[in-house]
Length: 570
Image 1 (cartoon, rainbow, N blue to C red):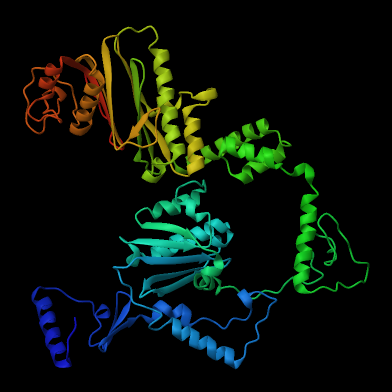
Image 2: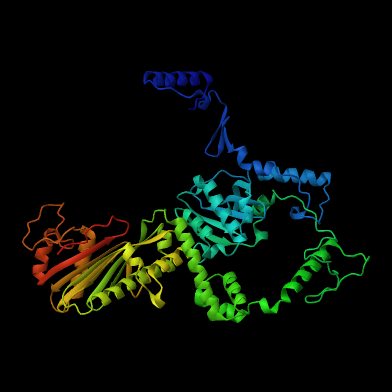
């Protein structure tokens, strides 16, 4: 509540409190400050006739400690003079005030700079105004103990996730750009990495509209500096410290593959910078001397391409089997299977209601399956879509084996436990394939159901998939799917007729087939033949079929995530 004078403010308060009392309501005094000359509101301090950025938004800059070293590491000591201190304070003040720091303009796009160091995260939200880029707010935090163990790519991705979540009130519903100095984050958003932790973080960001751009670290010094303010100066190793357990080799003239040691009592006359080179060379010489344990580049690339597993796992497999690709590949599959089953057991209780309907129509036979996962993001992943294909073709092989010798209409309904016992290529079970995909993508998945059908000569199978997945040529996938088994139809138009019938089944959700002479019962009609035809509301489905000289035998309709029920009746 805002008032121009103290007298009018008292009148406004009396009116509001009186209305609350009359309505029988109470106000929490601790949460109702009164008579303020300034107040914080939506990231700004408002009062005294002006609007200015909140102090807490720039507290990281105001409280920035005096830098002791370059990048907070010894050596490279900084000589701090009174002139340097004065310039340092002026710089901080300039960063925290107009015209450098600006209030956000939600009509302009935002730019979010993020960075992660070994000890902290930093981010700067900025906008381009009047031809120059101005910061809106600075944020940073220290890494938690368990986060210090993350890999570099995980820390950088954590910085993006944390910054977007922290600044969500600025970014929600707006297109913005994330700028990072870690190039892999550009393609990680497309799910080309199999790191489960990173994948989960990107799934949490699917409701935001942003693109990721890469810039070298020296081009985003503000975010880099924010992430490093938690680093403490640390001394470089002394000359008696040894990384390998023995005496350190001489720094000067020490080349890779050649170890030279000082004589007893001899000092090591090297500078700290040169000693760092010597240590790196010494350690490297130990590594490169183990030729028998190193994976050769050509087999490594070939194994990576054929399996799709991370380089580090492929390298480990080749080292284990002395660069034998066949044994290494078999071992990788076994390890992935074990890891997949372990993850599958851990994730078993998590709900999986997203996913895909897979539909394949062959020669006088067809199959429709439902495979579930936790998120729509994973449903778009190529590995998950391959799993849907494996389930569909496994069910189709089972149908062909079971229906061999049958001459009439054959329909089989398979539940999850029945599907898990079926096999795919090379004898692996579908349950093993599900576990392998879970291990790769880090989400719970499940085969829910499948229906296979086979029709006799003279009958046709129509199909339709809604919200279909693009880029699939050998089978159709989507959120909804239908199969319609029918006989007759005008010559040459059976495929189009089957497509229209499938479209109606998906759109109108019939529960039973009904009879050709059934009378319609209005909008709540659930019998297929008595329903108003979706593509021609002037006729029922039965009337449409009579015009096409066709007759429907049966239908199957799947909707991803629905409770399994009867899929049509003859």
